[in-house]
Length: 140
Image: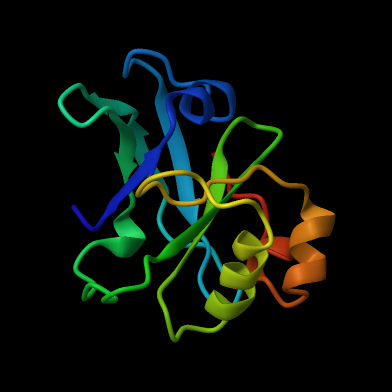
């Protein structure tokens, strides 16, 4: 599904703290102007057949598929344990900067997409205007 954010098992468990699909995640999308969207509560899921670890992103629901280039999602863990996220499609502001940042890392093997953990300074260097950098912490 297009609205699925897929992860490696390691990233799913270490970054998001999801194990066996039992951990609930609180995600808040960040709009292009830095305002916050609606809080989303999600359970991490696993598809044994495809070995995908995933959760759904409301910000991607109902959008047209971008074609050959995959969309990019950036997640920021907050002190509260909740996450802000930014979802970008090809052609949207910031997509090219995020795509260039990901391309600066070694390509994974096979048909896997790049998934990187990086710090805010690296994100700011790649895209100084990234709305995640100035988004407020959501009330929980």
